[in-house]
Image (cartoon, rainbow, N blue to C red; front, side, top):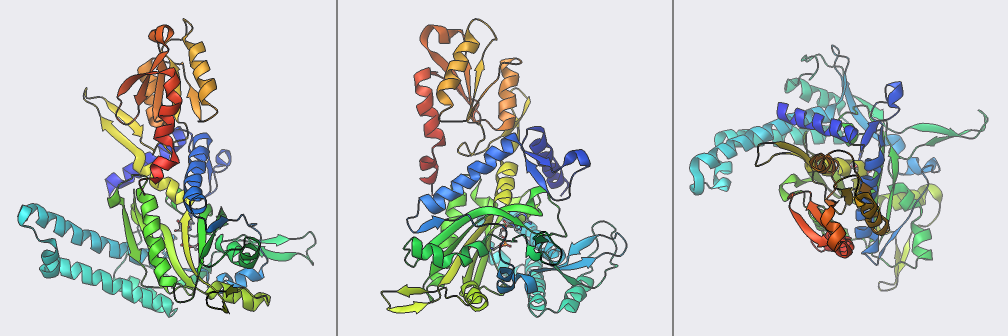
Length: 513
Ligand code: GAP
């Protein structure tokens, strides 16, 4: 646990030190759970967004994009259920005065049972070696059975109480499990209360005529209200999808964990409209497709897992999260929801307009069903950044900090470094930059010894360092150093563009899908 905390602190300080993420309005002591993306962060974020957009929109003939406004007619949020049901169950500890999400306290308790069971399994695997039969061990070892069944029982009871809006039972569960406040260590809890997460604002100048608005808490509704516009003008046929990226706002009460849970964040969502009755087939399809997209980035298969929901949102008939192994454990990265016809029907009812599709093959009109994929761009950023940040001990015993970002996403693809600041080497380096900059973000650095410059580029995540030395003047060759292996090769200047293109081309990365 201590290790995890240290690793997470390192991620946060590295993100600041190397110009990725700053606290918002830091000179005024910051604003809680709001962050700014700095010179490198904005590039990484843009590249992640593009990696998603190309996979979803450019690579699929039947998916188109949209950029709906953040402000929407207030009835949108009545129809979507956000006014009545977009609440978190909150509980306060009377001693520390800290506020928590009651469901998260219980989920953390269940995760601890999970970890205990996993430890028993790992211990036994070591003890029995090749003879170990994991399945048999899980089904017969009394301690593992006890941990897993207690975990399932706790999560089931919580899901049922939340579904029945039985907040008293959620509190009883916290008391029965003897969950303590992580800050005060006490069990002195208030009752559990619901709290709406939408930010309100006003449209219009005068107090009498101003209209109450909300900042959108998800981008999805902008897609639903435009369903017919896009379907008709794009002559789209079911099944088809509409994708959009953009800001969303939630008044998160328990906003900790850096950019994992923010009050202003960005979503990348796609709503896929299908025939009623075919939604589960498409739900399975998108679950698999989205996981493959994640795996293409090479962050490690073991860092992902599916979590199928026991407690379904009011609009869903199937739902799963892709969870990622963040520095603080496995948590939701992306949601895949089969949302039925809930949203389109609700907007039909509240607007009085038809949101239907005439299916020529079936010769009938219907309200399409929807399968949604929804991922937080900032969470994806954190997943990539925290996994890429590594400390290595080298052969000579020295240490290096390296940010092994997937090269396709790295903010700067190459740094061009003259070995010395004289003898015409800087001029050659500038010429190389002038050629490469049309295709890639490249940087120039001539300060300090070459070894220190390599380390600086390692820490900022630049995949290639190109060094211009005296030999360059004789034969137009440079060395290219690869960040991850630190291997160096001598190549012709004229080959650089092609070499970098191969390594960072989206086509080559998508081919891994
Ligand atoms: N339209 C469905 C929807 O909004 P959600 O599970 O509430 O579903 C989708 O959010 C994704 O948005 C999450 O999987 C997460 O990655 C991201 N997300 C949600 N709340 C967030 C927050 N406060 N800060 C950062 N990312 C958030």
